[in-house]
Amino acid sequence: MNEKNITSSQPTDVLFALTQVLEARKASADSTSSYVASLHQKGLNKILEKVGEEATEVILAAKDAQSSGDKTEVIAEVADLLFHSMVMLSHLDTDITPVLDELARRFDVSGLVEKASRKA
Image (cartoon, rainbow, N blue to C red; front, side, top):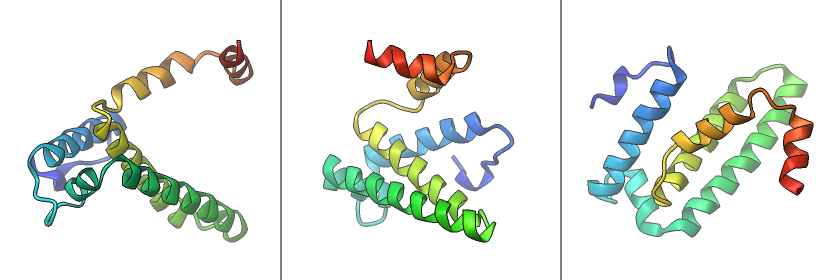
């Protein structure tokens, strides 16, 4: 697959294409030449560390975007967070599909009602 041909015309297409790349790198890539393979080799704790690091960077970038009005950095950091979250899902032998299904399930449910249902 040529990853450079992926566009954002259909966001789910990008997510599914990324899922395929992540699985391919997890299965057969050399950890000295693939960042994804190196994360898988280092294990779940390293992947979770990266997810946490990216989440912090999203928070800082969002605060900067609010004061500057420039959203370029927050967009890049959210992309990093989503990427590393997808690596985590891959490491746990799942993909983005159940996450998208859960978002779809919540779509017509009030956020307040949905949150209250998790406490029940």
